[in-house]
Length: 354
Image (cartoon, rainbow, N blue to C red; front, side, top):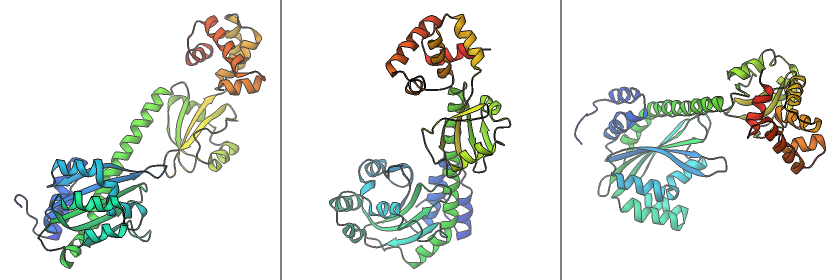
């Protein structure tokens, strides 16, 4: 192995802790740690468990692994890997909540695959593990409290015909594991925050006619677009509103609730503690009614238009007015024609215009 050579555990730790982004992980983290434990190759795998329990390989980094090997693993074999299956079940993640990393060596991967007693595990061992010349394995398994849906495996390999990882290598791995976990946690958390900010900004842009805000567990507003800022002035001090937000379970379709001059259209948990709330101002029915009359709408059409401006869906309008949904749709087509608009959004804008 040519190039940078670590001299002490401290120098490896310093090199690892200097990593500040995804692009530096392969050379700044995997490479020095692989030298430290005398591994021929290494990889870090970031897995994420979806809401329905499915497992996805989000991203990976590697040192001295061919692109073919990486593609083969990610496209075909990762779900058959006994390390992944055990890790995502929590057996390797940290037996107790006080630990954030587990380090161990595996001298017989074939026996480990045999324990799972499945054709998939057997195929993984023969067609991937042995076929790529691997024999011995040293594993770091990480659990990150800030990202409970993520599971990380750092795997270091020695090829066939070499000695297994001994006590000295495992001891060195355990000494460097906290630094590795810290760097990976920071990188992944930064990525998740960037992704969340992108989604937040996109939603705020799309929902400019509605209030869009994110509240923390104490009902403090930590983000709000301009419309939401107007809605929330004084509203969070409303005891019934605070109690509603505190007690509501996560739901993509919360029942509409009115508090003072705002209406909760929907709310959803967006993290372990944060809650996204979509609101709209309760419309000035007098102003809407006057504008509706200027377009020649009938009294029934004015009722439909007013409820639409309040944020109700067609079925909800039908329920309030005791009409069929088809009748509401017919009224809306007539309203669109009279007001020269082609969508609900444009109708709302026209009727709510100052």
